[in-house]
Length: 424
Ligand code: UD1
Image (cartoon, rainbow, N blue to C red; front, side):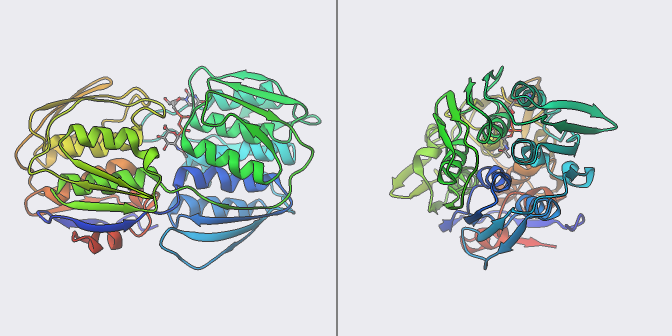
């Protein structure tokens, strides 16, 4: 990771062409953790080549799993994972600080080896992100959990026991963590008020191919009948709906025509509906979606919600679109308390945005002008690239290591459809 690298984007180009979408980051991460549940082989296709996945692979290796990485492909690479000899059970702060998703290791490791010591995941730029639902659910499944010296130490006396769990909020990560833990538990687990994201359905498919008995993913009640052991699996990760939405937004903001290939159009419904409200022409094909931007986008209002509502991971990108739209847009962020940091950076480019608590009021301006800005986080960084694509002159975007966490071959993909972007 090179902390000092930056993107320089020259504004004013209309983007046109096709983009191949990679495997979903948020599906690949829990699936990689789930590979620890079995001594058998997990073959995972379309694992995106991004920093977060590289970190997860490093952690799996440190825990004693063997991971072979296949050749690079447009949608990611194939991984062969064998976790027959999982021995080291400690995950240190160097990993958990860099990637909060390392919390996913708790469920599988408790189920498989009954013990884990993991450094407490830190907060991040989009809010404190507590893990209380994860810990409470694991305790209900029979884990003993102690928090000391910045570490969470968890153990299972014998075997996890199935139980009824109600989540106060449909947390994506807690739903996935508890599903993975329950797969090898004794008896049946029911998770109520579960998150319904497509990535959870993908995890269910992966687990069931391994021999687990999970049903209900995609609905708000998930039932898991525990089994004694799991086998081997071959699975293709679903396409990344956030990467796809981001490229459609790039077509929309530049008045261009961008087609994302290899997607599941239904997963993008909330995003395409908003783009249409903003005056974008959207065409859906089999496995593709095209966005054709208007001369000027129209303002609209937006509220983030758990799936199938509008994804918070597309909220910063939409803020960039609204910044240049005709009229006033209002964004209500209901998932994370502190996800408007990019507004400060967009203002440096000339945007007119006011934020107050969970609400942002975006008064569209006719044009933005290039300046030096800094990525507060992953999706926020993409919002700055989108703004840079239409700003007059050059926009320098610093701290792009955030963007590397989640976008495979970003500058190649953008350059191929006509953007002028360079990594320096
Ligand atoms: C996942 C996604 C992330 C996305 C988010 C919401 C992955 C790897 N990351 O994150 O990209 O933005 O879903 O769609 O899939 N909460 C608690 N206690 C908990 C857990 C969560 O209070 O124990 C709160 C969070 O602070 C937040 C809300 O619940 O306000 C939703 O968080 P959650 O769905 O858990 O997000 P992540 O799984 O962290």
